[in-house]
Each structure stands twice: as C-alpha cells, then as structure tokens.
Length: 584
Image (cartoon, rainbow, N blue to C red; front, side):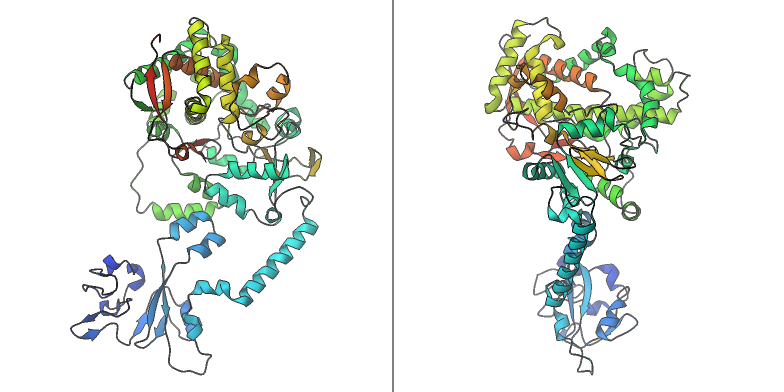
C-alpha cells in the first residue's frame, strides 16, 4: 500500500500497519511504488505504482529467472509484488528452528508480467515459488533420488538389519523434529513399543531398552564407550566439568576428587543432614504461608537463576550446526539486551574464591592443594552440581507430588501419611513405604528420562545380539528401560509403589532401575538426591494433604524435554495445601 495512505484492502493506515513490506528490501525504491494491495491505492486520482523500473537490493538472482540483469526487473502496470513465505522449505532444508524464526518473516519477491518476448511465456512463473514443489517433474526427481538413497542405504548400511523405521536408514530429520519440539523421549519410547528393546533411530544411532544394553554400554563392560560431542553443551565458563568430560580417563581424575563428598556415609553425617533438614524446613515454612490455598512447587524463576539460560532449540542448533548457531547468535546479539548475570553465577564465583569452607563440602575438597584446581574450574564444577540438583531432583519431586495428589493415586498419599503418623521419630531411611514411593516416582518420572549417548569403541561391539560398528552412537533412556520389560515392571504406566515392597523380582527391578544411570559414570549425587527427596516428602506429608489446584489441567503437567531432563510443559505445578488435624 502507499505510504501515508489508507489501504482499501486491509484498511491499514500505512505500509507499516499493513505489514506487507520489509523496509530493508525497499531501500532505494520510491515511496509511491510501495503498493502491493489489490485494488491499488488511489491518491489524488493517481493509481500506484505506475509503470517503472524497480531495483531491489539483494534480488539480482531474479534477473536470471525473468531475463533481466543487475537486480532490475522491468515491468508495467501489471507488475505485482507477491509475498512468499518460504518457511516450509527452510524447515526442510535447515531445521524446525528456522521454521519458527521465518514463519513471520516473509520474503519479498517480484513477480512481473513482461511484454511478449522471444523467450517462453512467463505466465506460469506467477505461481508462487513454493508451488514448484508440486511440479510433477520435481516430485518425480525427488522421489527417485530418495528411492536411490534408500536402496543404497539398505544395501550398504551396517545398521540395516536392526529394527526401526525405514526413514531412519537414510535420515535423522524425523528424530531432530521431535527433539526440537521437546518430545524426543516419547518418540523414542514409541519406537521401542513398536520395534522392541533395540531400535535404530537415526542412520548412525541406536537406542536400547534392555538390561543387556544397560550393562554393555554403561556397566563395567562399557568402560570404553566414550561420551559424544553432545556433552559439549554442558561446559560451563568454557571448562569441562566431571559430567561433560568425554574420555573415561578425564572423568576418573575428577571423580577421584569429588566422589567421597557424595558417598552415602558422608551424606548421613550430621553436618550434611543438618543442611538437608534446614532446606526442607524452609520449604515447609513457605508452605505454611499458603495453607488452605495453592502453591506453585515448580519455581521457574529459580530454574532460570541456576540452570542453563538458552532454550532447548537454541542448544540443539548449537550441537547440530555450530556455524549456524554462531551466525544466529551474532545477529541476535545486535538487538538483544545484555543478559543479567544469574544469581548462581554470582554465588559460585564468590564462594569458590573464599577460603575455609566447611570441611564436609564439595568446595573444601576441590580447594585441597593436592589437586591444584583453578578457581574457574571450581566455579564451573560447583555451578554444574547446583544446576543438576535443582534441574533434576526438583523436577522429579514436582512430578511425583503431582501424581500422588491425583484421585487415582490419592490412596498412596494416605498410606504415606499413616506411616509418617505412626513413626514420627523414624529417620527418612527407615520408612519402607516412603522409600517405595520415591523409587516408584523415579521409575515413572526419572530425574534424567532422556538418552545418554555414547560412542561404540574401536572395533565395534555386539550389544543385545546385534553387531554395532565403532563410532555408532548408542544409548539407553530411563523412560523406556523402566517400561519396556513388563515381566519386570507389570503395568508399567501405572503408578504403584507396592511393586517395590515385593521380594519377588527385586533383583531384576534394581538392575533395570536407570533413573541415575549406572556404572562408573552414573550420577555421583544419587544418595544426596534420595536423601533430599525423602526428607522433603516426609516433612510435607506429615503436615499437609495436597490436591491439584482447579486451574491446573493435565496438559500443564505433560513432560516437556529439556536437554536430558524434563519439566512440566506449562512450567507450573499448582497444588492446594490442606493442613492435617494431627499434623506435626
């Protein structure tokens, strides 16, 4: 539409109101030619734009299509400017992330109707460029190319004999699509449900959901399975932490420094227990201020302060296409406000610089002169452990408390309250039903539900009856290992703490329990996590009954994948607290 005029088609007061133009693309074009509406705008009896030669920067490639050069397109009064949204094309070629970025950023394309010339008539070119995808010849060539690629992969791929969707033989696009939409875990699990405990999920990636897979990849036999570059996403301040080290030798060195601080014997010492109890007490005091009302037990602001600041999609682009991530980051940095330093950064930086921390703490161990750790490495390790504790244990508690507040599981809450009422002085590790509730919560809602990828060592390995060549990415995910084998976990989608009180099958359940991973690189803080979860549940449910807030819907608590953890899709978990009459 014309600058400063009213568009008769969309009633916009200016080209900005109409939203049909991109100013950068119109640089150098007279304002009187800025009309794209039909019927054309008439100002002072003149229709715009008149016949003119339009030079649009950056569109010189159109000259080769329309027979013009130098980025100029000669047209007449029938010249039309059409807006063409190319998001679907870029979504296919680059990533679903670009699709979301481009959906509201149409490209400005000149589509003229030239006078008769010796070249073929260009009437068909008026059809939007995306319609080329529906051209029979283009479709035929595309289908032929994909067929050749598929047949070639079927013949040559070393993973061709593995169960899995056909598309996974020649493309990882579908897997990436689910990753970008935050439901990779559910997608991979659906493949296990369809194909079994071994499934090919990408041309060079295999997922296992079996005891044999867990033992081989992560157990003693899996010491040669190094972590993949995926873990580069977890470096902090440019340094590798124990979790993000790729080689087993580097991990072993760091673990020797930190392991004893997380040993169960150290967790059960009075100094450690005092800290756990105090944190739980503060949470209960916060609950008391909401007694009779609702409280959001998922604190998104705290998550932002201690966890990684980027979105899931941004981190995935960084992993799959570092060059694209850098380009996007450089462009967006021109417009974005500087990010405030999270509270956690200030905390760990200042704390790691101090001397004389309590002797039982992680920091005191790292400051030991025998280990010669740099200040920045100490800060990175501290922040990694802080983020892991909140981003995993906190999420698991959130899902667990939501589940036992549901009508279908309310009997669990009542039995737990009865055990706590009859054993008011018992330590948290002496309450069998509390232990069963926590174990079942971690089975259904693992702290780390997603895949933990590893590279197959040189020479290849046979895993669960299938030969897997070296450098293939293999993994297990707790969400599936806790559900696929129904001889070990009957009715796997049912929340049933009683299964952990049965002696029959106890060994198999413990072997398949993968909530904290397993083996030498399993979660070093699992004893601390269990102590925190049990202490908080004991303190809350000895005082309150919890029920869902009426404003909450099931969709709010759907599992939304992060990088390896998960959060409620609605980023909230509102529970109503009802004080117990005989509460402590």
